[in-house]
Length: 202
Image (cartoon, rainbow, N blue to C red; front, side):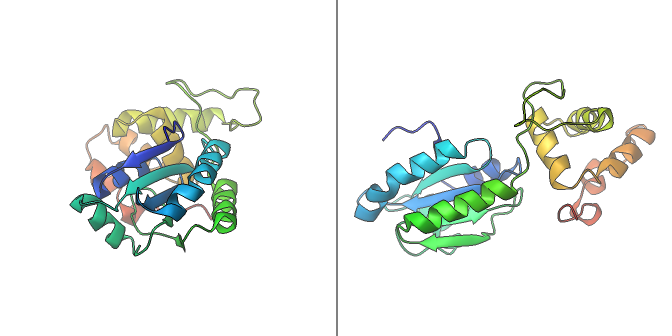
């Protein structure tokens, strides 16, 4: 089944790239020969479509001879088909929850919970503005300015900047101000390293 809402990945490197924006991820680990995998596929498609923009759905075919796919399957602790693995932290491939088997009710509950707790969708485009749409965040002028500053410093896109700042409760603003005040004469990776960033908003 061709699916615009569920992206296929093949390796841990692919997974890390998909986690970079901080959006919650559900990884469907399946095999093409697996009957239960085929049976639950329409439900996966439905949930991915329903929660688009809040929860990212990925698929990994680990039932063949692709060593990278099998390594990722074992790395996240999966040992059966299908297994659904959830991730909630940017760039962290450590699962926060997993569902073994084609349990549609459990999968629906997991997706709903991740969608409820996910950061709001980032505004599209290079210029951050508050738009009269309830689905969009209402940013202060200062927050919009911080997004633009962070995006420029880290050479990332607007979506990544928004999710990163929102994920850390905007407290990374202090580090941004320090960078700007210094005229850029600081170690950027160290400045934005884990030791200076909280695990999440309090």
